[in-house]
Image 1 (cartoon, one colour):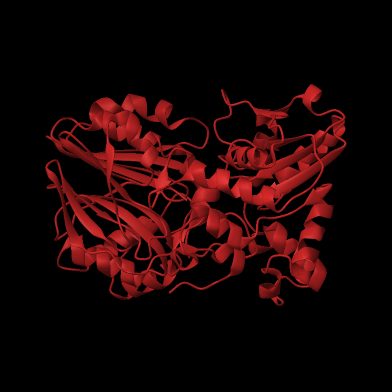
Image 2 (image 1 turned 180 degrees about the vertical axis):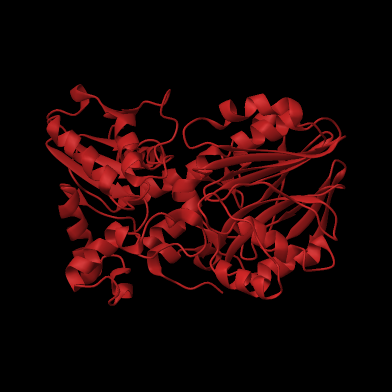
Length: 467
């Protein structure tokens, strides 16, 4: 998915920028980057973070990143930030989202004899294409609006200029940006968990399509928010850090409510509840509290040398790392009937290995309760499934087995507890070798978040189109 952080301060901003960006490390898989403006102009550092922590990669770069303004990014796709010279002035840019019509935009640019560089993977850089769109207009504000109107997908961004930072949230608010403040400084962040330990307090949740311009003295609204919003519901289920809030609603609070909803729908006889760490933990606590059943940890996560289970880009290595990180506790497993809460089941390969380990250690029964419905549609708006084909999704595999093709009447499988939905879930249960499997109902997930359904993007579960 990716996350961004920017700060403008009356003093040197480097520590705030460094630690504020670091607090987004759970959102990206590949690249970290920082850019600042100091006495000698723009400075930038970009590092690969696939095999190590953000902090360890950037600490040696901090002395050369001086200034009162800066932007940072954790990216799961392209190298950022980028620095551009243009008729609008020199600027740095970081972006979060997904540009589905990247090739079409580039082809039109090529016809006008505009060229782009490439990422290391040989593909166009979405952030560079976005910057080029911005430069087609007469002002940064007009350029941002032009870019957001042109792309198909989603786009939130920060622009670092010589006078301040522009923050722009996706036109339908699929990804968040929140403004924080403290004496002498303002910050824009994807995650509010970046604020408290740096002394910032939440000042404003930017609305969909809103654009603001920040300086050390405050911020000015350059474009009012739109009325329509569809923020990604998966933020609360999986992506978001437990301490973060979106639209004023805390992630851990929602996960507890998701677990409560799963428990209300359940009467299975079990010895205890557990969560697949870490994002399943909040859901499991809610389930355990709601049903007054013990919460225990038959798996513990080993993190000193394995900071991220999904960090490697190669899927086979990612699966191996995930298995290495979870260590089973035999005395809590043998002879027990265990129910696990999980944030979601995407492919199911990692989960299948973990389930088999439980049975190998003597578990009598293993039940699974994902906190969201079955994922059957690929994400159109974020880079959640960049490295996965649609058929990789556990739900689509089951549908293909039932229908003979993955593209036949998909919508009839999206309705919770329907005949087709139950058949799909049963196929997934059999493949994972679970004792029982029940997914969260979409209406219960929406209720747990607390926003109207038309304010949430639920495309990956029900295929509903956006405005």
